[in-house]
Length: 102
Image (cartoon, rainbow, N blue to C red):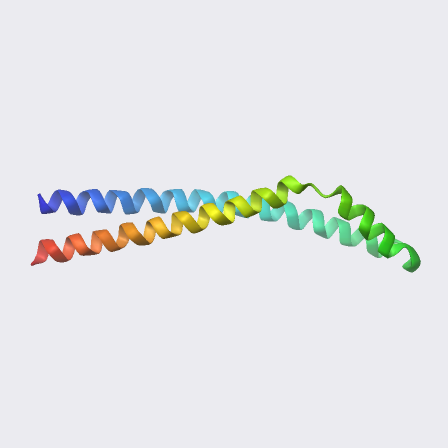
């Protein structure tokens, strides 16, 4: 029975680690998309005459896609929750192994 408990907690730890990895991949993609937009925006502003830069920056800011920022925020939450689940599963596995050895 104790060995089954170790197996179940280890399976939960591996499953949540896989989900954490997938969330991190999604987070990386969204972050890369946002950074590419910001870099292009900075390049456009740098090409503008000095007197028009502030107005151009405001105009470009209004064109930004709010969905990217929402996605990044949601992925921060997902990565945090999966990290907590991985920690809980690893601690449960550790407790099960200690109980099995005693």
